[in-house]
Amino acid sequence: MIKKGYHYIKRISILLFLLTTGMNLLGQQKTGTLQIRFMHTAGNQPLVLRDSTYINPFGESYVVSKLKYYIGEISVDNRKLVADSNDYYLVNAANEENSIDLKIQNGTYNTLEFLLGVDSTHNCSGAQTGALDPMNDMFWTWNSGYIFFKMEGSSDSSHADLQRIEYHIGGYKGSNNAARKIKLTMPKEENFRIKENTVTTIVIETNLDHFWKGKNDIKISEMAAWMSPGGFSLKVADNFQGLFSVKEISKQP
Amino acid sequence: MKNSISITVICLVSLLIILSSAMREDGYGPYQPDPIRMEVPKGWPKPSVNIFAKNKLTEQGFQLGKKLFYDGRLSKDGEVSCASCHQHFAAFANYDHDLSHGVNNAFSKRNTPALMNLAWMKEMHWDGAINHIEVQPLAPLTNPSEMGETLDSVLYKLKQDTAYKRMFKAAFGDATINSQRMLKALAQFTGSLVSANSKYDRVQRGEASFYDYELRGYNLFKQHCASCHAEPLFTDNSYRNNGLKLNRFNDIGRQTITNLSSDSLKFKVPSLRNVQVSFPYMHDGRIYSLYQVIDHYRTGIDTTQSTLDPLLKNRIPLSKAQKNEIVYFLYTLTDSSFIKNPRYAPDTKIVVKNPHH
Image 1 (tube, rainbow over the protein chains, first blue to last red):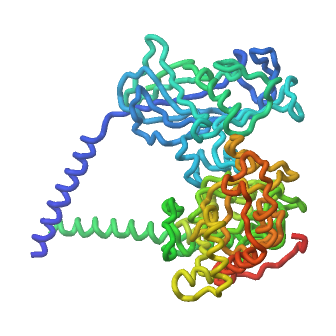
Image 2: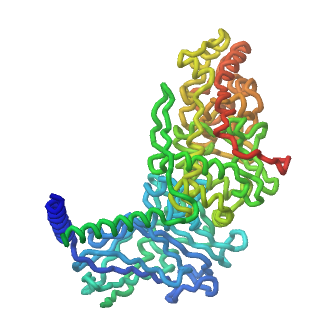
Image 3: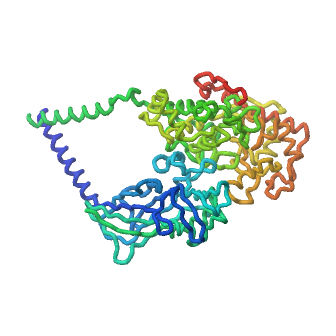
């Protein structure tokens, strides 16, 4: 009787095992890795924090000491990613490398989209951790909400105290929303392919020349420091799309 | 038989794996949190947002939050705790202080608000700057004229203390100390501060009755004050300009947050619960007594301001006798079971090191 019972349990467990693995295999799509890598430039040179002086398109010289921004809601050709696309990443020019690895379904893709900023839900859901931890110094404690883009430094053209430049750009409420969806279309004949066991890297150039001159003109002599939602934050936000371009697509087996 | 042995072995091995992972010793004992259910007082609306939906309220979380609330190490000089300005006996307002004091003998620019019934509050601060109870502590913690600290430094200090490691484990399952857990624990304490047992509440529940002069005051209150100080929370959580003159800090209130000139000089309507013990009054503590507050509404309102609340454009006509009756009614909002509740008091006696605070 006992022996019969064991046999019964054994059969059921084998059946369950086969069922679950079978379902897993059916549900699983083949995926590869997309790596997004950010590199920062100004005036056709790599950005070096603190040490180098750059000239903006209006002839104003400046030094950058800090450059950080949030990236989230990454998608390719409007397709959801296999990895949680609600995650946020803090790109920091002070990091040796800024790369994001994502699992993506196999296929050939032409566009890459992401949010520059943080969506409104994550702005008002209380204490967050990871990239959105307020320890990262990207949260306005006096007016709840994330700073989406932060650039600090100095400039001879600045009328602010100690000739500093300080742009803290953010705001998530209604018409003050400074988060911008960035859409990057791959150059002609350069659609990227995702295959399993392969890492496809897209290098995105973040060119500060376009921070100053894009949809709007940002002149240091006119505004050297801004640290709140609305107003000037929106003016800068409208230049966000132009900041980014695809520099290179490469594949590693 | 062979099969039955192998199955027995598999069962035993998996049981061992489960047991060993559960018993992995970190020196702080097992994780056995005691959940707390927050009750909505009889006759009150349900909070529009459940602040504990993603922050499970437990006795261990509450106790950790309380310890943090009373801990001066959250400030730069080690002496200014949350409780320095939010005093229990003053319904967690700052007794007899127009402006709160911070590190380095600094003054802030606003009056410390009372802390109670925060679970029903959508936004914090006089100007509604703070959008969630969990991120509220970041403001005083980092403000140079309040606690003047950085998050890095606070967490560093907490991590040196094994008592905190034990309490973070008890509240959250492991001894990791991070900003999110610290803020969630503080929210468990402050969000649990419910004041709903004043004489007014007992009258509403049929357990007590007003004296005649209190009842006359209550009727006057409902007629003249309750459209903003709405029952049962005694605030409608709106922002309004009540006709105070611009102060020396040029504090324009809500406009700072919305950038809208139509919000100039608007401030949050404060709850009047425990108002007797939370003096002085107004966003900058400029008025010291309740009689003077009512005098402001009777005769003091600056009716020339463009954003003045329409309900106040004719001021509030009240006789001196009526003024007294309203004050008598306001005294019935004092909840001594709240301001003397040992559950909200620190576990160890507070030693006042700096009498100036």
